[in-house]
Amino acid sequence: MKAIILCCAASLAIVSCSSNQNKQSTKDSVVTSDSVVKTQSTVESNNTPVASSLCFLRTDGKSNRDSTSIELVIKGNKVSGQMNWMPYQKDSRKGKLDGVIAGDTIKATWTFMQEGMTDTLGLKFKLDKDQLTQKPLKLNTKTGHEQTDESVGYSLSYTSSDKLKK
Image 1 (cartoon, rainbow, N blue to C red):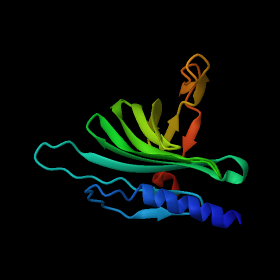
Image 2: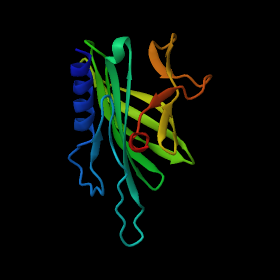
Image 3: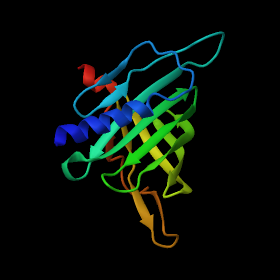
Image 4: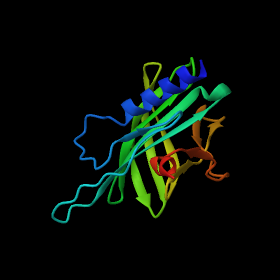
């Protein structure tokens, strides 16, 4: 049963990294038991910034049944991509990421759909070599909405392709 769930999570991550955007990839996707990621790809022409496409997966919850997949496309200091949060047997959040990267810090807005409604969240990530980490979210009791918890560190870790190659 666990193997089936992990395969489903891996399949969903593959789908999220296989968007319809034109991408020229120098390497194929990598699939292992609980991680699916795409290795870095680059395209460069006549002073055009280099674009990198990176995919990450995080599994958590009871028996690692909840998963979050992230695809980041970094071109210069601009970041775009997809983020899909899929908790086991609950409503998922699927949407686009748009933001900027300065050094190793990514500040992005996640525009997602959940239960037929569109919403946004400000997210903060740290991209350090082969690892993506995120500041967790907390509930703002005044607004009733989630927001990034600025009082804590980057504690949510995602698995990337570079870790799978070692």
